[in-house]
Length: 616
Image (cartoon, rainbow, N blue to C red):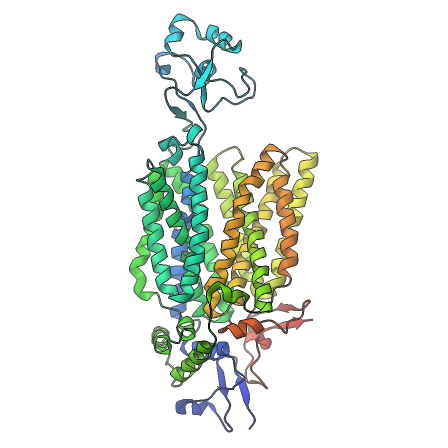
């Protein structure tokens, strides 16, 4: 009998590989051999099928750590944005309680307008007041004083008695508590800047650590640092350097809390579940940030908000015993005995038996991986194909991140209830992720990524056209919501592609590289919005549309990853997708297509063609 690979598609898509003449399934008890043509990814996928790749173990882990945890953790990830809101403010002038005057009448007397005039539609100055006191009202009526100030006979000075804040929506925020306004207004901007620096440094360091020391320790350490950093910061608001340092520290570990459980969940599950796992995490994210504004509305106090939405995430540290280390990573790091223990625990929970040749296969994977060293981010550019792919993914990360930030920040210019505005922007992501879970499983990743980047550009062009001829209306708002929906889908797909394209030894590092570039370029988002406010309100949408076109062209050159075996080694990653044609479209229809029994192939396919219809 010639060397062969027999593929049997059953409930767990079990794969039996043998290469010896006369080799059969029964040989398994005597140290079954595997085809020399089988890749390390295929060998590990077979092991995972044996112990259960979609059983109770995977369901438990993903429900707890990729859904429940992410639902809670999305709140401390973003709660500081609400806590750092700067409410409308003006100079405080004592004594109003002694006079029968409304707040607006009081401000007309003591606070100049921004252009120095009285009345009209101009806002009051935020950091200036007339050099008057309530005692002056005892000598003259307030109408006389208004006439005097209108003629600018009273000098304008800085705030003499502190600040007063609009408390319509916020009882207090961090800036209103610490008076980070006027000459300290850059404190808020600098706090966000320190957070962004933390994003970059933390993603660079923690991402690589995840591939060096393991997913589990990085995950637990990152979660603890974020919870402690956010919680302690609320007591250090008066000491800005300490507050800024804690913001940097908390942000530095935040992304790893998303990346690590997602990487573990994918690496212990069937490749057909990857999109679903990614989608579950995004649904948890959307649920969390949608609930957050209502908690903030209920609290009113920024300290209570931070503590209520941060401390619950720390409770998940108590579940550290059921967090496995990735057996793929352990095998790739030449630790086959530890990988076997993890696989044995998976098999036990899933009520399966560990195959007799488990150690033999794990040692083979470890031996191959030992010969192919990964050197962190440098390895992302170790071959022409991998370097180009890395740069393409980075461009897609930048395009998607900047678009997301611009849309979110631009919403802050809307009038009305700030909590509901935040909620509307959050909840619109949910249908995007649900649609993403379904459509990427049926029509693939690559062309769906291109399609939604293009749709985002089209929606923004429509917004620009409406703004060119009409005042802002509800049609513009609806189109912006559709653009945000497309951006959410883009985020879902690019995250999925990043995790599936890179090998096990670089999976977290490669994803981190994209996040780092996204964080660096994300700094320009506030300036794009500023141009829209001060120069032309169409600028932000023109920028998003242009980025959408660039992203669509870039994404079209990425490989399709639907139902592909995750590359285990650097060499597999370098060859991944090389045989795919540019215009090929991969689709997958129904579960029945995945249950083809007794199919014999001359070699183990790089993609499970029995599950797919490929149009070239």
